[in-house]
Image 1: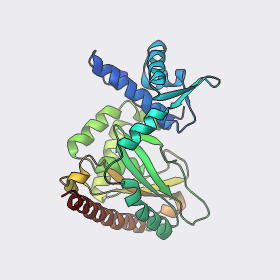
Image 2: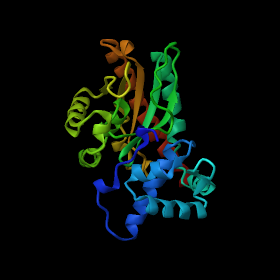
Image 3: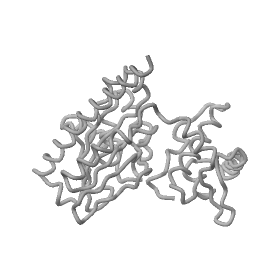
Image 4: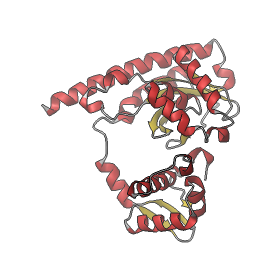
Length: 284
């Protein structure tokens, strides 16, 4: 399984030995299978990614297959999402469609920069690529597919999501992901330093450490002040980013792209606020 898609080992955060532990383990398995983007995940890969013993993982996977939350590809010996997950997802759709609301922003960023624009949101300890729009420049920088996950703090978009969190939540995310950062040639200390810099600059920058020749610049979407609106409660922290080959994001162009992102993020926050207010009026 792609290392981008690995969740933190369950051993890193001991869980109580009761029903809650089983729920956490099942959720970890589901995250890994969904992150495989329909390609299927094997028992061995799932056990390694979640820190579960193979017999334990197998029992849980078979129970999920019986409940139609998963489907088993017998010939390939892999598991993929089942029909019940799709049905539950339809019922869980948010009142505001963040992806649809953000799409015009991504299209403008891609058009104005000529490069790839991304929408990233927080998903537990990870940053999830929710949408992408390609620009017109002939050389495409496409390090992420929609649905890819990285630990919060790895890459410009994930670092900007982290920078947009309240201090206590950011601290918890850093501590929880500390054991995962070395897989990305990072340490908790280096991520903390990059986070402090991103907060000072109001934008984050990746330097090709994760994918050679690519550089990204990202900003958080300023959502905290909006979460008092009922329709925005539970809305995940998000970021907008532009990724290009390194030469296209050297100073001073990098700063110009950062200004584009800041302007678009502020406009997006205003759009979300208006949509939430309209939703509240419709309910009355």
